[in-house]
Each structure stands twice: as C-alpha cells, then as structure tokens.
Length: 140
Image (cartoon, rainbow, N blue to C red; front, side, top):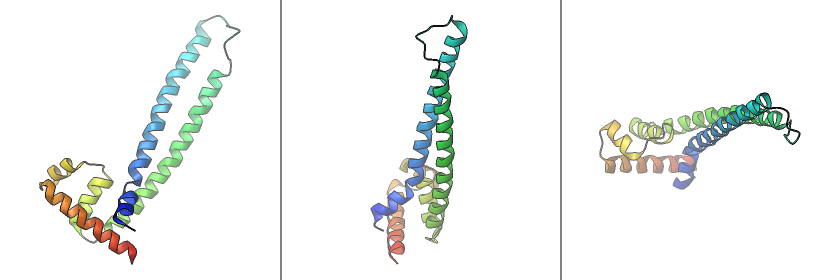
C-alpha cells in the first residue's frame, strides 16, 4: 500500500458516516413530505387528481432508506474495527493517538494539536511518520 492508499483506507469510515448522514437527511425530508401528504388526505375533500399512492410510495422509500442505513452501520462498525486494528499494529502510542483522533474521531489538525498540547508541525511530523510506518508494514 502507498501512503495515499493508507490514507484512503483510514478515511473509509468517514465516507460511510457521511453517506449515513445523507440518508438521515433524506429520511427527515421524506417524513416532512409524508406529514404534508397525510394532512392533505385527511383535511381536504377527495381530489380526483391526487395520487392516492403518494403516501405509500413515501413510506416505502422511508423503509428502504432505513434498511440501507442499517447496512451502512454494519459496514461502519466493520470498517472502524479494521482501522483500529491497522492503527494499533503500529505499536506506537503517539502514532495511535494521532491516527485515531484524525481518522476515527474526525478531528482537524488544530483540534488534535490542542488536545495533545503539541505544535501543528509536531502533529504533521508524527502523522507523516505513522503513515510511512503503515505503508512499509503493509508491504511486508
């Protein structure tokens, strides 16, 4: 694995979480739509042009999205477990802490520096060494 591939591997959980967040937003939107459709159906006299299947289609989409989120959550747990194992394989607590904060807790560089009371330059140096270590280790 190259350093770029190591970073891509470690960033997988972030991408999965963003996909889950997107689906949760879609669910919120669909629930609002379902409430609107429900109020239209219950508060108004029957409109012959109204599609009676709108509510059914909305609920079906909600159920599908919730199933996708469930699958994504399983992927997220598996991916995080793999990343944790990979990070721990460094055997270096400083590497592990910085990599975990960056790739599992999604902290930015300033946050990591503040949490650890290190300079940004030190964080970058240690991060680079950690990635290099994982690159070499993954090629063995």
